Image (cartoon, rainbow, N blue to C red; front, top):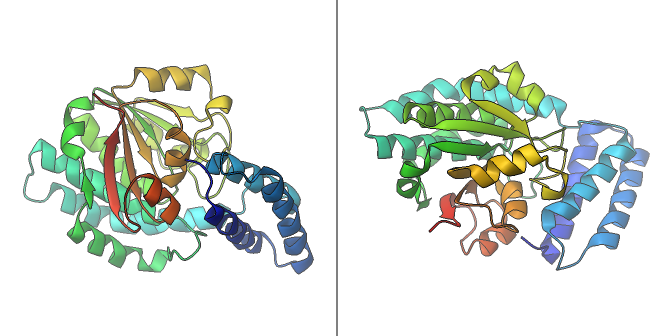
Length: 293
C-alpha cells in the first residue's frame, strides 16, 4: 500500500503518543518530533510504501528517545487484558459443537477482535479496561467480510504472520483450531521491538512457541514485513505455504505490495487509507482472501 497524505499526521500523532510513553521530558519530546518531522519530510512520496516510511520514522523516534521499546509496559497490559477474556472467547468459539467451517469462522473472528489492541492509532480507543465489553459486542456482530469458507481447504501448511501483543493471546485459539483441523503452523513474529508488535521474547514468555510447529522472525524491527530485510528461510516458507495468514494493517501495508499467496488478511479496518486500499469501509471486521486461483 502506498502512502496517503493522511499517513503523515497519523504517523506524527503516534510519534507523540509513544514519546509520552517513554518520557515526561518536554524538551526531549519536542526534539524527537523535530527529528521525525525531518524523516517524514525527506521520505514522503505517494510512490513510497506507507509502512516503509513508518519504519524509518519509528526507528528515528526510538533512536532519539534512546528507548528501544517505549511500549514495554503497554504490551504487558495488553496481554494481561487478553488473558482475562481468553476463557470467554474459547467458550464462545466451541459453544454448541460447531462443524469445521463454523469453528474456523469463530476462531478467525476472535483472533481479529484481538486486533483491537493497537494503542496510539489516532482516533482509535483501545483501552484495556474496555476490551471485554468490546469483545462481546464484536463477537455478536460477527465478520463484516467473511471469506473463511475458502480458507478451510488451505490449512495444510499455514504461515501465520502475527501482529500485536494482546491479540497474540487470542491468536492461540486459532492456532489450536488450525492444528485440530489437521494443519501445521509456522508463526512469524517481529525480529525486534517495534510499536506493540509481538517478538520472540513475547512468544516464549507465554509458551506460544510450543503451540505451533515452527517460529520464525521477520528478520528486523521493520513495521510489517520488509521483504528486503527478511531471511531466505522466511521468504521460502511464505512461497511454499498453502496459506499465509496476515494479521493487522501493517502487515497488509507491506505484503499487499507483493504477490505472495494465497494470503488471508485478518484485520479491523481502523484506518481509512487501509480500508480504501482494500476497497472497503472503515471500522469493519475483515477476513479477506487474496492472490488465490
